[in-house]
Length: 530
Image (cartoon, rainbow, N blue to C red; front, side, top):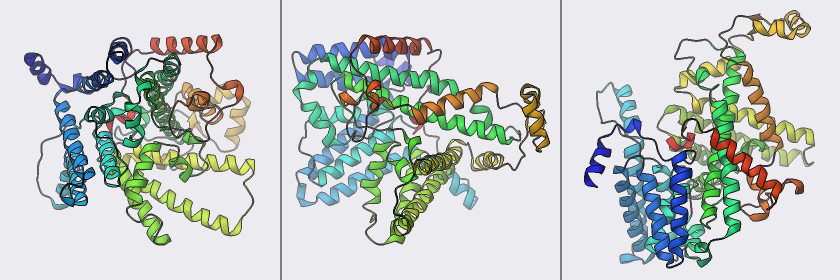
């Protein structure tokens, strides 16, 4: 065993992929073994079943690099011990222990995630030649760090009542959430791990879990991976010396916006479905964010648990909205800048966070004006217009988020603004016939473009936008069975609600089969890099 670990340790890490939900080894090997082992052991002991699930979660994490299991276990031991001391008011200094524990977590996160970034920028500013070894970012370090910081704060506030170490370890390592969220709260999960019904096999949980899992798998391997092929050439054009056209830039930006949507929505569904197989309900983390009527609404729908974490553990401690408008807007900007930095060590993430912070400030200011001067509810037209404006603002921000540098982002945004012209491919002139000639007379130019924009791209964008804006999401379809926590306001039209029936069985089987057959290569989820 030692020799095996040594051999694995010496492998080139670039050749080892995380165990992804959208891989054959996960679906046909890992998941069945864990599932049957869990319920088999649960017949004899809940603690053994919880220990089995904990061990499986550590194995799942260690599949990528076994060395980082020690880091994860060390973090768990440290935070559990700190939480125990805080909860039991050790030496009557719970606040001091809390402060030291949070700082220790942030130093660990900063060491792995931001050390290289800060050293590089310090060298650029001062002209120094400081060097530091390149760090490999441990998978999910942001998520398990934030989860445990929330546990420490909740313990200090007296919200934590249970200190079962097995349950705590499972709470942190639980594989459906470990790599890319949601950010979990102790008070939501620990009671479920202690509930006897969690350890009893339930046919409804099996059907609901598999249905949601395969909905998410379809979104990932068919929708997100299908549209991803159109994204890379546009975002690498600037570094390749290619000047983008208006059409190229908008096509790439929209495709990335939709790829990210289906990728993260797919992961969120798969996490909820997998958890439901084990009788555990995760919090809702994604709720049709592109239907948002403003940026405030967007952040109530996109990565919901991260938004709540930033609000509860950063924005409110900074003062929230308690000290006047100027302080409130400053707190919003600081929160979103740090939220952007959380996503990655790069200026593009910081600028992205600053953009969303500015959006939120403008949105809150607009709402104040609206309350003063307008009192009528918005019409259907204004509602649709608000959704469109919000969506376009989000698209612009995603360009910065995806670009490999600020200069690349600016090059794409300039092309989207029409700075490089509005040229259309010359092949379209013949294809469009009379319409093409009419456009020529209106001043539109048709010539030999670099053809980054492919014909299939239009179909992907149109179909995807119709799904995003018109179709109910997975939680709305499954609303009768409460697949996730915090689902207020979710529900679809009656005819679209899922129920155990032959029709839904056939639909789910087709979805699962098509999704599995579409797994040609393993592609990581976008949020795995955070």
